[in-house]
View 1: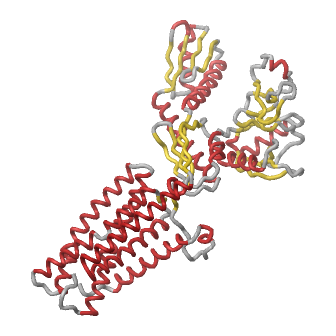
View 2: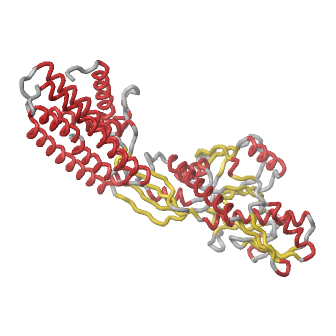
View 3: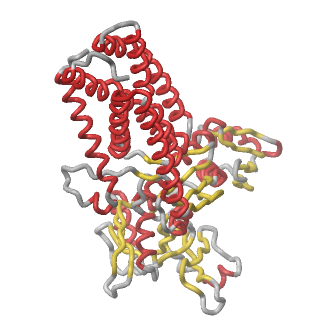
Length: 527
C-alpha cells in the first residue's frame, strides 16, 4: 500500500496535465482560444440552447406530398404502358393516395391490370365495376417511402444548418414525420426559418414561345405546358407577378448540380454561379446547342427565378442565375442549391426563441449552485476527516478540472441539466473517499497500525466503490440511450463525473496518502 508503481504516478500526472490543458481555454473568450497555436488545445465547452440562447423549432414533413409525388410516377408509368399497348382509357386521376382510371375496352381489362402492376411492383392494383382500376401503394412501400423522405429531410436540414456555421446544432427525428431542430447561439432565427422553409427544388424548362400568354391566362393552356409565376418580376398592368408559359417537361433538374457559389456579374450585380456534374454538363450542352436563341426558364419551388435567352451553346457545364438578388439572397440561394432539395415541404409546428439574457441567468445560477455545493463539501470533508479530508478536497478540485477538460475534449454540449449533473457529481465525488476513510477508521479502532489500517481500508472499500459507481454509470448510460435533449445533457456530465471521481478517489487521493505516509511515518491516524 505504501508503494505506488511509477507508471501509476506518471499516469496521474499525464491525465492531470491533459485535463488542465483542455480546461484552461474555457477561461478566455472563444476568439482568443481559436487564436492559440495549433499544438495547444483550443476547444471550449459548447453551451446548449438553454444556456446561450438560440432557436428551437419543431418541423413536420408533408407526407401527403411525398405520397402524391410517388403516385405521380405511377400515373406516368401507367399512361406510358397503356399507350404502348394501345389500350384505350379515360379518367386517369391522381387522388393523392391512390390512382384511378377507367378502361374503355372491358375485354382488355386483365391485360391493363397486368401491365400497370408490371410497371411498378410496389403497388396493389384492384379491379372494379365498369372498367374501373384502382392503384395504391403497398403498406410496406408507403412506409419505406415515408422513412426515406424523413431521413433525407433530416440530412438536407443538417447540410443547410452546417452551411450557416452554427455550432453543435441538435437535429433529430421525433415520431413518424417530425424533426426537432435546436440551434444554440443563432442570432437571426428568421433567416434560418427562410432557409428551412424552402424546398429548393430547381428544374430547367424551355419557355413555350408558340403559346400566346393572354390565351394561357384565359385558361387555354396547352396540355404539355403550364403557367408559372415569376419570383420577382411584377406585371405593371395587373400588379401581379409576371407569368410564364413553360413546357412541363423537365429538361434538367437540380439533382445534377455539383456546386453553386454567390458571385458578381460584369455589372457588379449579385448572381449565383452553378456547375453540373458530368451527366448534367452533357445534358446542358445538348439542350443549349439544340435550343440556341430560345428562352430557358430556371424554376425554383414553382417560381421562375430567371428566364435568360440561350445566346450560344454552353459546353462547359456551368452557368449563372440572375434575378435581382441582394448579396444575402444570392448567398442563401447558393447555400440551398449546394445542400440539395428537400423531398417534401417542411411546416414549422412550434418555434421558440431563447434570449441570451435568460441563458446568462441560468449560467449565473448554475455557478452559484456549484460554488455553494463545493464550499459545503470542502468544509464537511475538512471537519469530518481532518488532513485526509483536505486531501480529498484537493482531489475534488482535480476532479472538476478533469470534468471540464473532458467536456471540452469531447466537444460535448453543456445544458442546464448538465450543470445539475456537475453539481450532483461534486457531492458524489467524495463518496468513494468517505467509504475509504470510514473503513480506515474502523481498522484503526480495532488496533491496527496506521499503515495496516490504510492498506486494509483501501483494499476492502474498493469493491464497494466499484459496484456503486458502475451501477450509477449504467443508469447514466440508459438515460443517454433512451432520453432526449436535456436528459442526455444530464447523463453526459453524470457519466463523465463518475469516471473522473473514481480516478481521483482511487488514484489521486491514494497518491497523496501514500506520499504522506512515506514522508511522515505517523504513529496515529489523523482522522
